Image 1: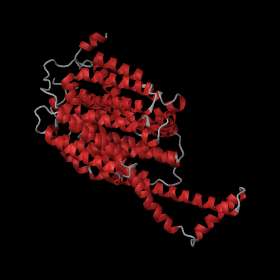
Image 2: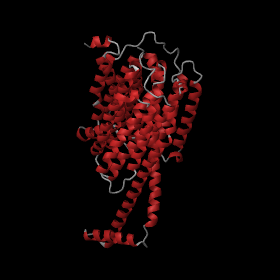
Image 3: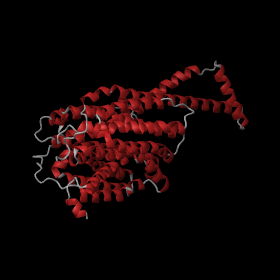
Image 4: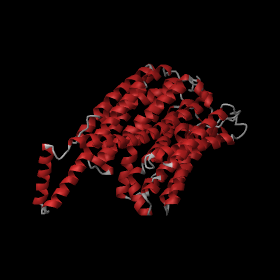
Length: 522
């Protein structure tokens, strides 16, 4: 049966959807592992005897390796064969996951995570280009919809699954769980993906200068984004060095690639206006998709006092809403102007962000329920049509390069979004605390009454007057910090909403979607 399906054309019904399932499963593996370890860092830190700064490299190492490989996937696919490279990436990702799980010290775990990131980087962009290269224009909507379910649900599934596995089986199982799934995906890829065209032209030579410059620029940029806040940004010589090296590396990389005969990343795909505009919009989407989603768990755990598992469960309804919307929209998106849907999604997202901005000390799980569902729907309204509008006008020969660059921008948008929002949160919290503190003085009647009531409460608990007053002052300070933090979260959500609104003019440079040149000819 498998041999017969493997020999069948891509248009064969069962094989066609097996390809979609395989590509989507691979992409979901990569995205889930981007953030599945976040909820387990404290346990890993204690188990391996590391500092918080050291254990942070478990996340940074994966992200760095990821962003270096993503833009190179088209070149690597041409060099080794698209199917062979995709299967190799799956096997490498799975093997590195096992190595992560058996790591006996922090340094072994960081190296294993870097190897896992190299394998995972070959999955996301390659999976999407496989769908564009093997599906007819009228089928692209549904194929990309199924693929998008994994991409959008991944950020919600990761913390949920990570929290559950960590709480029940231990942190090592967040890596061991990849073994059966990765092997199954590799088997599916071997069985159902079409064989490479033997006439495909291989790169004439290896662009070593391009690889080195790309690695230097992206590695330093990712480290800057990941470590900037903890190092107090440009007050640190290390961060200044990373910024200089990132800027120099990326600028020299662009100049070199535009002149190279066989570039490792074909930047010439940016001549397509849909790719250049779509990639910028993709970065905005990444900031909203990952950055705003980052803020919700932090708020839930810090101010609603949720556990990691409860926080993950809070995100599930929104992920389910995304999945349902993705499937429904996938059935009709081919008949619609993708730009109109993207504009609607951007406006809808801005509205949802302003709903989130109403958070206050009395906000509960129920208050976040519908905004999270609406956010899931709005995200799909941008993600699915944006992929089609960006890549559908691109000829088949350039799909892989365009897809790699497009997915890189979304990934970098997420890193930039999280780094930016973390910094703004800290800054705005300090501003709001200073503003609130101005109104809380020893001459304020309301402050005196509140302080007296709290002091009386602690005295009734058995403390002497001086200790009770100190305890009351500490509690008042905590309330002040909490209120300032909530106001800073509201600022973040408003900022994301404004960002989506001001990016709307980019839709005029996108394609309409629908008829995809990347699909197979009939």
